[in-house]
Length: 453
Image 1 (cartoon, rainbow, N blue to C red):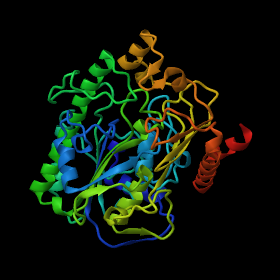
Image 2: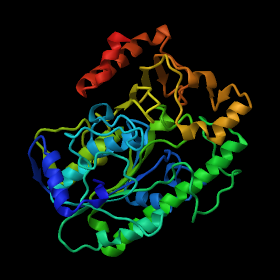
Image 3: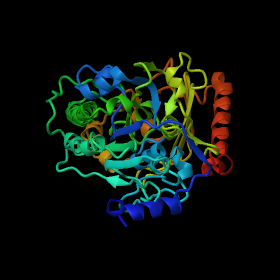
Image 4: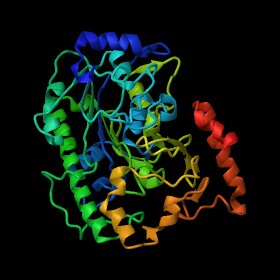
C-alpha cells in the first residue's frame, strides 16, 4: 500500500508492528524539528560556503542564525542509499538499502530497521513529510502525514507546509522537507538568471563551454531550491515557531557531474550542512560528521535517550558547542550501488590529512549513472579526445586500483595515489586496519573481500 494512502489507524498499526525500539527511551525535552534535504548540491555551491555567484539567501540566513559545518559528509554518494542513512543512522551496507529503491532497481531497507520518523512519533512527535521520498519500504520509513503542493516549486511546497507550523494540537512536529532540485535535469523556473561566463568551474571538472552551460543551469536550480528554504524560515518566524525549532539543511550527495556524485572523492561526499538550534549561538564547526550521525543527534535534541543504541552514528550535539573537535577527526563511508547496473562497492576512511579508498570491485571499469554519462560535460570531454577530466587523467577515472591513498593537505584534489609508495606503507597499513575495524564494528558483509578477492 503506498505510504501516501495510509490512514492514521493503519499508520499506528504499521509502526507498532515493524519499528520496535531495540531499547527503552526516555524523554527530556522536545523542540520542533525541520530537516531540509536538497538533491545533489555540492559543498561550495552557496553564498555562505564562499560562492559569490549563486544567490542563496535562505541558506545564508540559516547560517547567520545557526552553525555552519565545514566537514559534513554523506556516507554514500547516491540518492536512495544516502537518504536511508540519514533516516536510519545506519550505513547502507547494514540497513539493506544498497542502492535506488524505485523502478527496476528495487533496493529497500530491511524490515527490522527503526527509522528516525518512527522513533520520533513514538516519542510524541507529529511526523510529516513532503517532497522526494526515495526510500522503502514505507512501513519502515513511516510518516504520519504527507503534504502535497499545488505546484512543483520548492516555494509552493513550503507554502503548503504552513499548516504544520500553525498547528495548535500541543505536539512538537518533525517536518522532513525534500526538494527534487538541483537534481538533473536542472529545473530553473523562478530563479535569477546565471550566465555561463560567471560560473566558477571547480578543479575536478574540465573548463569547457558545455561545462559552463550545465553549471549555469545547475546554479539556477540551486537557487530555486533555496527559495523554498527561505520561505520555510519566513513561515516559521511568522507562526511563532522559530524560537523552538531546530532546522537542519543538508544535501544527500554531491553535484550530479562525473567526478562528484556516485564517487567517494570529496566532491561526491563532502557536503553543505547547516544546523540552527535556538539554544546555540551562531558559528562555524569543523567537527567531522556524517549523515549517519544525523538521526542520533536529532533524537538527542528531541530528548530521546536509547538505552541500547541501534545506530552506527553518534550524537554531535555537544560538539556543536565545544571549541575542540577532539573525537571528531575521522569519518567512514560505504557505497555499493547507485543504479542496479552499477555495482562498484567502495569503503573509505578519511581523516584530517589522509584518505583511503578501497575499490572492492577494482577489476571492473568504473560505472556511470545514465544521466552522468549523458551529461554535456562528459560527452564534450569524450568528443574532444581529452586525456584529462579536470585535473584527473580520464584513464585513472575509468580504471581504478584496489587502494587509493591521498594526502589531502598536499594533494586536496586527490590526484596522486600514494598507496604504492614505500614511504607511505605504514600509513597505508594503518588506514587499512582502521577500515577493517570499522567494517567489523558495523557488520559489513563485504569484509570478506579482504580474504577472498
